[in-house]
Image (cartoon, rainbow, N blue to C red; front, side, top):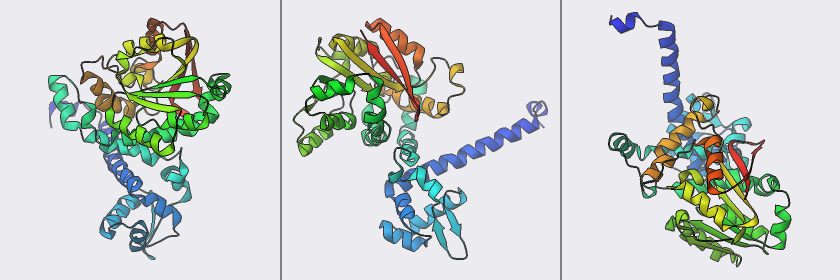
Length: 358
């Protein structure tokens, strides 16, 4: 026996080994849940009584052999209930409440897509650990597609009943007609919802990703929204002055190469009596402070493999997903903001909402 092994607490080793095995199984299930979401298998199962694999595959219009193997993972993962005598599979309603599109905004299956999305760049991330630098946005396939679905569940679903009321009087202003900027808008899902709801207001969405902006412009044309436009611009180069009554960033500041410049540009672009709403990740600015965070390990992983690295890829600050309240408040103050109020929403454990004025 090695010298090290003699000094170990075998009970602790076994416990940690069990934890690691659980992680391995859960990682596999996360991939399978992502596939179940993308193929519509959970939606199909929720619509059927207990059914055979062939029936499920037929209704979902999928290859039966793959569906049977997927059902094996769902069975041993105790997500789907299998009756070996009848040869049927069933998705309990309590599980469907968290795994189907009908369950949005509680559909956690949609978030499992990040597992494979981040896994695609593991080789590049390992290279960055050794050589520095970062992985650019272009290397993340489907990123804006997944983020748009994420935004649709977390932001758009809560936008009118929960998010806008955080700013007293904002809804009435939007109804009368004001100038609005969404910075880092991605595919513009949230901004388009606002533009449809408040036709008297004027909306501008800005993002540096041209593919996302092209997609957003296509939706504007399809919806005939004359009060909404999008521009592919670098937020760090924004030159507006006293141009907007309301500026919003949804989960966008921590990704920026130069968030300090972006926040200063927002302060300059905001009219004296305007308001800036910054939705960003709820976190502490210290690792110890995040020990109790329910999604801490996942969010630090997202930071390492996406948010931090895309900033570093263009020579940015690499702020990272978990920059935290303390850093956010300091940077807002440095940008010229003096009135900062932080709110939480009961249904949203992941985000803080900063209500900011000059």
